[in-house]
Each structure stands twice: as C-alpha cells, then as structure tokens.
Length: 290
Figure 1 (cartoon, rainbow, N blue to C red):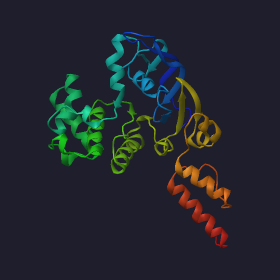
Figure 2: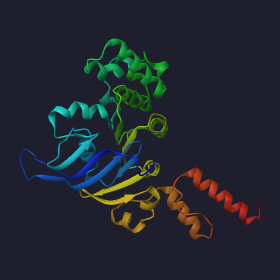
Figure 3: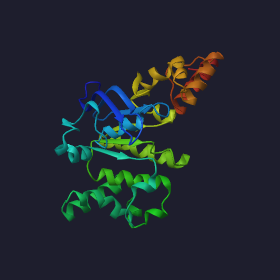
Figure 4: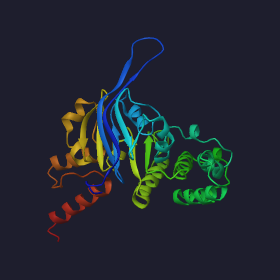
C-alpha cells in the first residue's frame, strides 16, 4: 500500500474521559493522533486499560471526543447529522459473535442493516447475495445462526457490515473468543477483503501474530500512542515492548534465538512461512548449495 494513499480516518488530539454516575472522571485517551489510510491494515495493541477499545468506538461515532476530533471520509463524528453516514463508512465487528446476530436465519441477519437504511427490496437482495458470496457463506444462507461455528458467526456479522458498503472494518478483539480454526477463518476473510475489495482494516487485538500481519502497528499505553511503525520496526523494539509488558510474536522470538545461536537469518522475519524459508535458505547455504 502506498504511503501516499489518502487518509480515510484522521484522528487529531483525541481525548476521552468517562464520566461515571458517581466518583471521579476516568481519562481513557490523552491526545491521540492517528491516520488510517484507504486500503491500509492497522493493528492497535496494548495492555488492558490502554485505550484500544475506546479509540475503536470513536472511529464510527459510538463515542464522541471529550476534546479533539475524528474525521471519517471528510465527516466530523461530532456532527449529529453525519453520524449515520459515518457508521455506513466504518463498520464494527465485536468480540462476542452471538451478541451481534439478531435474526433467526443467516440471510435475514445480513439484510438487517440494509432494511434499517430503507433500501428497496431488490437492492437489499442484491447486497445480501454479494456479501454472502464475499464471505463464502452462500450455502448457509438459510441456516439458523445458532447452528454455526464461532468463526462462521463472525463471518455472518462481517457480511452484515459488508452489505452496508463500508470503506473500513474495525475488528475489536473479534477473534479472541474463537478457537484457532475460527481465528484463522476470520483473519483470512478480512485480509482477503482488504486485498480484493480495498477495505481499510483496523485490528484491535491482543494477538501479536495477528498484529504482525498488519501494514502498521500502533501501541497504546495509558491512553497515548507509545510506539508506531511497521510490524518489523515495532517488534524490533524489544526493550520498549518489555517496558509496556508486551512481547513480540513467537516467530520473532524464535528467529532471534536462532540468530543468536549462529543461524544467519535476515532481519524482520514475522511469520512462520518467512522463517521457514529463511531457515531453509540458511541450510542450503551451509551445504554450499545455490
């Protein structure tokens, strides 16, 4: 993705303070700046209480700034008249699959958002067909959601958002309640959407393996941006991550261990296939093979 791609979401000087009914106000975000460009995948990571989910909810106006601004495709989230347009552009997928499904049949669930927009029935049918095709659930369109696996349920939720024709998907810990197979299913789906449909992705995650798949990693701590850069840049900051009580992905740690043991590996290895290829190449070099 080009660094010159225009910003779809622009966050500037964002503060958010929760005002409980009783007790002291709780500051959650403290002057956050962030751009999300069209077609970009950004991972937001950080410890519990770092502000990740609060920031996520600002990206489609579920929360409004205490101070600062969030601009989505030229629309200010503080403008009440723009809220529905903002939410059409930025769709959210949450942690618990069952909390996002409301209909008795998959295709009815996918149609729900479009029906709320008042779209003509023919347009709704067309959008539902397209969304189910994109997430690979056409064969399950008449299936009750409660009979689906966790990964399939999240794909139904994604289809319901896609039918609204968003420009960005925000996944707030969307794989954390799934088994490994479901996690792979959802990540493969959203990364394919990014590649084939040009959607921007914002991944709020505790999984360093998922973060390693992003174009850019933003680390939050205490409601501020502590680190930002490519996955290779951020995960090379071992001391800084340790100070933030975070760890690099296991593949990164394994690559470092192998390098320390004398295996000649390139820097910036982030995934298992990359590491496997690099180790194989090192082995061939050691045997004098081309």
